[in-house]
Length: 175
Image (cartoon, rainbow, N blue to C red; front, side):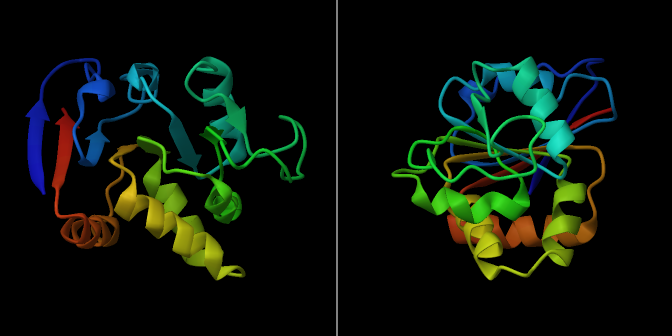
């Protein structure tokens, strides 16, 4: 992992310029990590640790995060149809539904990865979610993680994933 330190007050990343690899955008709250999703110029899958966060991002960036995995924003039921070309927010518990997609999207964005990893470690009733989550981590061209916490166990797993991918792993730290 290569660490790049920036001293800008706000995030100034253009995700559309990223080449194959893993990118952890690390900064504290309110600096524009999530807002920069608007620079994703191709199909994007967003995964978050909570439905509330994913739905909020969907409403803020409907041109990028076009859909949600639920029937509607107030529902607790997951869609049964439309996964073949799904592009938008999906939570960890519904990740296996993405196996129905015809192709991998160019971008996978993970907002608040520490929260998501906690879910993945505690929610294993269906091993297919873990399998498809790892498949996306290992195979989507550009994986962007947005978060402040960076527990060592996540960095270790991402180092392993980077080795499998045989491409870049950057932590871009805004301090």
